[in-house]
Amino acid sequence: MATTQLEVVDDEAALARAAADIVSDIVAANPDAVVVPATGETPLGLYAELTARRDTGGFDPSRLTIVQLDDYLGLDPGDRRSLFGWMQRALLAPLGITDGRVRRLPADGDPDAVASFDRELAQAGIDLAILGIGENGHLGFNEPPAAADSDTRIVDLTPETIAANARYWGRAEDVPARAITLGLRQILASRRILLLASGAKKHGIVRRALEGPVGQDVPASFLREAGAEVTVIVDRAAWDG
Ligand code: F6R
Image 1 (spheres, helix red, strand yellow):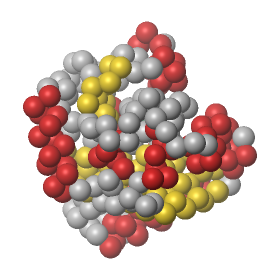
Image 2 (cartoon, protein in one colour; image 1 turned 90 degrees about the horizontal axis):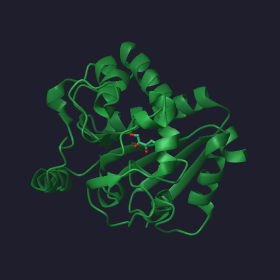
Image 3 (cartoon, rainbow, N blue to C red; image 1 turned 180 degrees about the horizontal axis):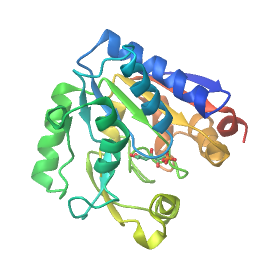
Image 4 (cartoon, helix red, strand yellow; image 1 turned 45 degrees about the vertical axis):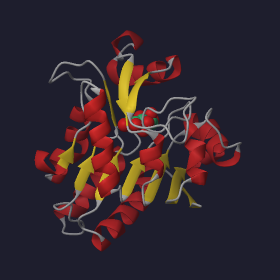
């Protein structure tokens, strides 16, 4: 059963530093780690902090394998909304991680390709998953209701997620309605999980995930039953509201 540690820090800058300390320690102990990084706004400070540490010799990402967490479906190559593109801009390019070290989700969601992706991932195992939380409790794009043993799959995004993600792309009409996500089974099997949340808008869902009933209506609540060592870092606004 998981050990869940909660760290409440002052603000987003402190969150980025605290998360970077943990990621740096994990990578120093295991330079060949398999890492799943969320996109979205919450981990941007962490990725900037890791880049700064790499530049001063305090963090070496050169041997990591990066596994994509989720993406929208049905986008043309080069579409500005691609989450793979987001990951490249926020993390891969700044850290100098080359395409050969990245395992990309099958962009067309082909079932055979998805099944073999999961098989290969299960063999390697995920050493570290860096996650954000949706305002509806999703992890990756595991939208509620999501079973703890759900595999990597295509999902329809909920109206809540489409509304929340409109802030990235302009209008709700610009948010693709379908996506592919690593399953909760794959995420929860990670050896270490880092969940990050910042801002008052995450307050309600953070409390529900950590203190409410564990169940499919709040996928992030399953972190409390994961086999992994789970660290939750939240800023004061997310914790106190
Ligand atoms: C993104 C992802 C999502 C986000 C979540 C929070 O790859 O998987 O689960 O982590 O929606 O997004 P932000 O951080 O933008 O609030």
